[in-house]
Amino acid sequence: MKFSINKNDIRNVLSKLQGLTGRKTNLAITETVLIKASDASITLIATDLETGLEGSYPAAVESEGLIAINAKKLYEIVKDFPHGEIHFNETEKRWIEIGNQNIEYHIVGMDPDDFPDTPQIEDVVFFEIDSAALKRMIEKTVIISGAADDKRAHINGIYFERVLDDDEKSVKMVSTDGSRLSVAEYRYDKDSELPPGPSIIIPKKGLNEVAKFLGSEGAVQIGFKDNHFIIKRDVEKIIIRLLEGDFPKYNDIIVKGDGHLIKIDRQLFLMMLKRMSILSSDTYKGVIFNFGEGRLLVTATNPDIGESKEEMPIEFEGDTVEVAFNPKYFIETLNVLEDDIAVLNIIDERRPCLVEGENDKSYLSVVMPMRI
Image 1: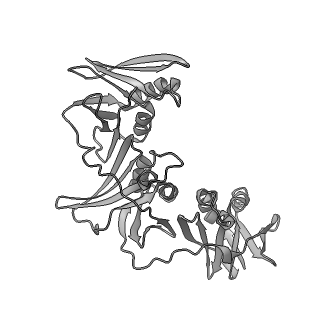
Image 2: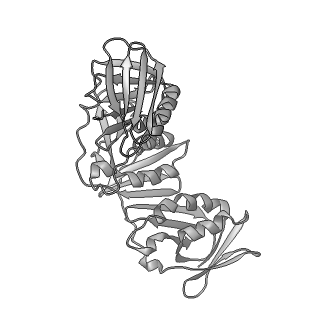
Image 3: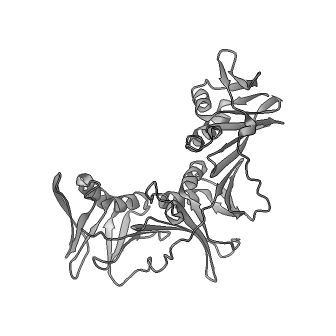
């Protein structure tokens, strides 16, 4: 195999696929990127056995072939390579020459026949979604992560469903860890095409990789077939194996109750909670929120370190509500909230607090109170 390719045509994709090839599996070959050279392009393939990427990029191919080369080392070579063409030439016993007239590397590859087969999925019914919107939905739901040893599908995955009511067409992504829940929604025009389909659970790890490839402009195609989620963007395709399991019925949790609707400056609230979380630890995670007449008082106590408190003015009337929350959950929510004003819907110390933007209703976060 022999070909030349411009550094700029593969540098970004090699950077983005490091999350796949850097993940430990029971096969050493998954640390490599498979390169197929044919016609006037090369195809790069990477997988962690759950998520796979395939992309085609223009190249000057002198002879066709197939190689598997360590993805990390290849990226490091390409990243710091001078601008211009990079020449690849497979010699004997899977040794690969990489360089130009002034630079030369000799890298040993692995047997490409050992590379896992890529699922060949056909007859997929795709539908279109705005690329930037999908990226935001992923970012707003993957912030919730469970324990590393938790094997439950609804903790490790994100629930993806389509809503096809008479007056609404939308897709929703929902995630939870049992202590909080996030719902992100993308609404279609009534005249848009959104085919019906099953609700599924997509691994968060895979969606994290998808987000790296999503741009701020244009649209992508997504579809589901044979227990796989497929997304196509330009010359790239990502396939993720779905999780099997049930997702909790969440609609009753996100119903706004007859409580207090509190509008609060997002940035001021965020910085307040960051200061109050300084004294948090694995043992003492909670802080006390005291909603009183015209003010919010937040108090943090950690017997091993000390205590702190801070007060800010809010519009609040009625009986005082005192409740304990993990400030980390609010901080992560406020970091992805796109409105300047956050709206808190709180009823009492036993029921969850709902957080959303004042104007943007496409994202809702639910935080359960703590017992202290």
